[in-house]
Length: 217
Ligand SMILES: [Zn+2]
Image (cartoon, rainbow, N blue to C red; front, side, top):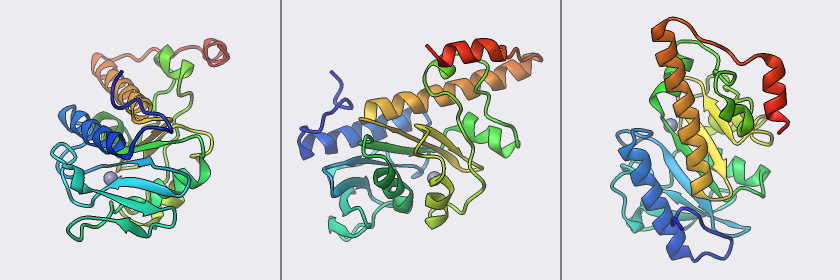
C-alpha cells in the first residue's frame, strides 16, 4: 500500500515521508510549481505536521516540516524555518473537520485558469465528479498567504472535500494524503477536459436528472 495511505496509528516518521512523497508527486505532475502550494497532516488531536514556507515541494527533506498546535504555535522546527504562509487555512480545516487527517493546497493550472477566466467549475460534465466530489465551490477572491484564505473557506469546508480558491489554486482534504491527492487529481482532470472540449467547440452537459441520480448512488 502507498505510504500516502496512512492511519491514525501511523508513526510520525511515516507521516513525514508521506508528505515528502506527496510533495514530489504534486510537483512532478505540475499541480504545484516553483515553491507554491503546501501540505499538512494531523499528527494527533492537538498537533499538525506542515510544510515550511518558501521551499519547493518537489525537493523537500524531512527537516522542511514543522509541528504546530491548532492555534498555529510552532512546537518543533529546524533551522528557524517558518511554517507555510497558508497555515491559517490548514488549521481552519482541522478545527472544523475531525474526520480530516490530510490537507493539500495546490496551484493546478487548468482549475485555476477557469477562475482567472471567470468561469464556473464544470461539475456537470463527467459522471465521476457527481459520484465523488459533487459540487465544487469557488471561493470569493482572497489575499493569498493571509487570514483571508481561512475566512474564504470557512463557510464551505464543512460540506466539501474540494474547493477552488479564486485566482489562486485549490484546497483538497481527505482521511489521508492519498484521498486528498485523488480529489486534487480529479478536480484538475475535469478542468483540463473542459478546457479541451471548449477548444473543440461544444461542451455536452450531463442532464440535471441524471446528475441527481448519480449523486444519489
Ligand atoms: Zn497558494
